[in-house]
Image (cartoon, rainbow, N blue to C red; front, side, top):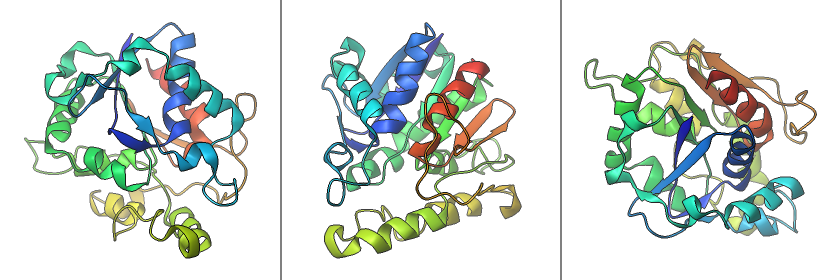
Length: 245
């Protein structure tokens, strides 16, 4: 299968990109990257590689190693431009997240939203994790005038996670964990027909799912749409998306 994975030029989440890429590649799929202008490799959020606070709150060692491998891949080093993407040429669409300021380029792009809306119409698998769900919430179905996920069950970065990370780090990192004034959960829920369609999942601030243990992970599947909350769900998210493919 060919899977489209659009990215901003900088600040995307290391784990939410590198883990799905590695697991899908190992399953034999072709992952195609795209940035706004194409032709130059994007850059992950550097604090997730070095540690947000005292070397902590960053990506785990294995996803960081996957990211180092990814940066050597030809498809990553020479991405397509968003405007050149033909959505119907792909079998799946993956929308990762990230919370640093560079993500606004991706989350607020009318060009990318148009491409996402076209892909949504194909009825093929769509996966979004963390802030990536916000891109779907902002993507409008031209026939209904509502978000493409208006009638879907979904999760995304829960408010308690976003708020907790902000309170712990604001003294050192300012609004690093607050991409927008509104919380991700609040904006996503406002795009749904019924806020009850939002599923928060179990409370979890420390434990993360791994390659061999999904006990701390959580995803929501509604038909061919799959969503997850944060990097701690990335392994389960990638495996479930592979099942959809």
